[in-house]
Image (cartoon, rainbow, N blue to C red; front, side, top):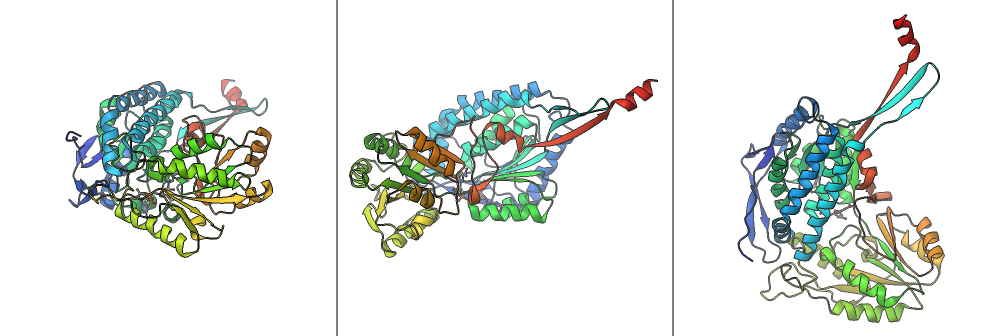
Length: 494
Ligand code: NAD
């Protein structure tokens, strides 16, 4: 790979690149070779305050919030989609370098960013309230107004994509934004800032304050002049965000959190088809995927055949440098994540599960990088740690089941409720089971199929609110009811 040009690494406030007030910087590393990529300006509370002033001004007094029509807002968003498309290869290369995902996945991510931003660009001039006829004396109308200044905080597993999932509806609704990327993967969000400026967004509409969760993230969730916060990350941090909102100005929160998603394979499923599909989605994004189907419930009558074929397929998965397009599984994002995943694998072994495949570090050519072998556990019980907690790495547990009622109960036996998969030729069985699963996304005979038009989010401790689709826009709006008395009008005219 030729030397990749890095983006500007300062903070982006009011369409300008500025140093952080403290002058501090944090480092971002390449998970393939563990080398330093670059240092990035590290924001703090005072920088957040500066960005909030810029966003507030753009919202209350700037062109964006005053004279720009919804149609022009839509055109600007669509222009951004075009620019992301034009810069696809650079963005994908940066994403792979910063978070270790395969270059093929990174390109898919950027394509999806384009589709999402374009989808929401189309919405900008279609956000409308209602007319509510009350009586001959009164009419009420509802106005769907942008909620105001919003903070968007995202995780490191899909750095640009998660940001676009929030950016699209926030911009379509007419909000102004302070974004914070993950300190592990700050580069593509930085690159996006120049595209935002080029697309013609007025100053202050989009601001990016890179930095740590404990400082920048904390300042955003506690800020008194931020009207809404949308977050993607762990359930632990989600609680802190909600607490910050509760302790400050009760700003509404959208939380996209963790999962421990079940994937149910019924006796009549086409095993070969299921296993081929699973091979692709299970290890995509290096298995660092919030809706990762880590609990495979396989009907006992097909369990052995399924396991044999699945193992065979998984053995074919190539682990290695994510820039090599033939590799399917790259390194985990950081040393911290690597240690965490290996810790869970050890816990599985010590609690009595059988490590059927993999189960340790994958030794890459030069011994560097945070690579973990694709790992399958069998002989797992539902109360084992590896069956309950989100591992966020390439570890699957295979759980045989006997009856429909049993599998529904066991699939729902989790504090999470992000996603679920059902595989069967019997569509009425699939629909009945989908009715009973407590999950925000249920995929029948497909999995992890996120679409711009379809809402995504969790039940239970997997989250609050939805990203993507028309539903996402609602959370960036305030509904104002205006009730008009006809009588007063008549009286004035007389
Ligand atoms: P994380 O919670 O550690 O960090 C997410 C973001 O929150 C980062 O930007 C981080 O800097 C910030 N943060 C950390 N502490 C904070 C605080 N006290 N206040 C405010 N912000 C703070 O999560 P992660 O390790 O980056 O991501 C992995 C997690 O994200 C997994 O649990 C995964 O399931 C979840 N995730 C969920 C979805 C979804 O759509 N439901 C999508 C992707 C990832």
